[in-house]
Amino acid sequence: MKSILGIGNALTDILAVLPDDTLLERYHLPKGSMQHVDMETGDKIWDALKEYGVKYVPGGSAANTVTCTSIFGMPSGYIGKIGNDELGHLFKSTMEQYGVKTTMLYGTKSSGRCMAFITEANAERTFADYMGAALEMKPEDLRPEYFQGYDYFHLEGYLVQDQELISRAAQLAKEAGCIVSIDMASYNVVESNDAFLHNLVDNYVDIVFANETEARAFTHMEPREAINEIAKHCDIAVVKVGKDGSMVQRGDEFHFIEACPAKPVDATGAGDTYAAGFMYGLAQDLPLDVCAQIGSTIAAKVVEVIGTKIDVPRWREAKIEINKLIAANTK
Image 1: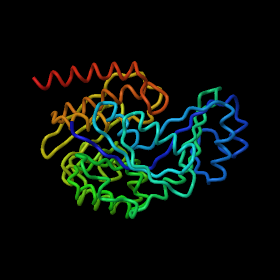
Image 2: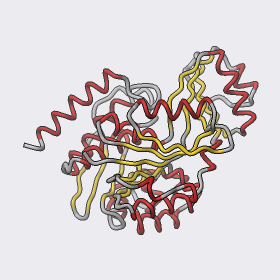
Image 3: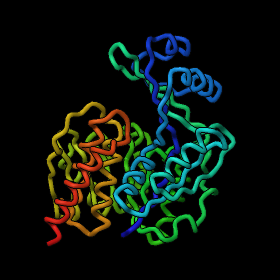
């Protein structure tokens, strides 16, 4: 089967359920907010969380995607930067347990983390993000041999924090013969880097994944017109429109795919998982609409759980549904 390599900010999601707001108040974290914190504060919060019992899950957009492609059975790799510490070793070992071949670089700062606090009263979530070593990854860290042997290369749009880094990664992937995809990450990332992202797509990117707000920021158009515009600049354009489904276009070929039924509790990771399903279908040369249906099928499973990792029963259900879909389209 064709293989995929991803690159992104290596962040460990740390999930804790709090009995009250005491810890939030101690570190001046408004309930329901997302705050960026420095290394000292990040380390203090992490230490304080341990007494509550925490769940650790390797995260970051590209890491989520290649973890899923690996579970699907695609040979999958990942490039990221971590600290030489407990969280960094946990990130690396957990990714490898999922079957991902890691190229982990080491920075001078502590490993990046996204700390999510759930307060029991109303299950409201509050976030404290510390990017740490992830932000230390630089263009000169990347070597041509990291990209050799892969068919697809998946870029995390958040890496646009370092435009030289993301350009260098895309360039090396192209030189290695990879088909390059990018997840646009968020509308504010697109708005802040509009000219750069247009240039990146025009010169290096073959497949663009965007949700409706990102597509609107990129094209200044509504979703249906936006996907048509994006498709002029790359080989395949995908625009996700939440519960309404998704659209995919290659040249003049266009498909609208309805969302699969689900009982959503948390939309985190849905886009990353959709991309994994889509790339898995593409790796098998399946029709575009089938690739999108696979993406929708697996995305419907992740929104039914808290966090970005699908449980075993749902994975089992998804694989049965997807195998039936593939069988019906390869006769």
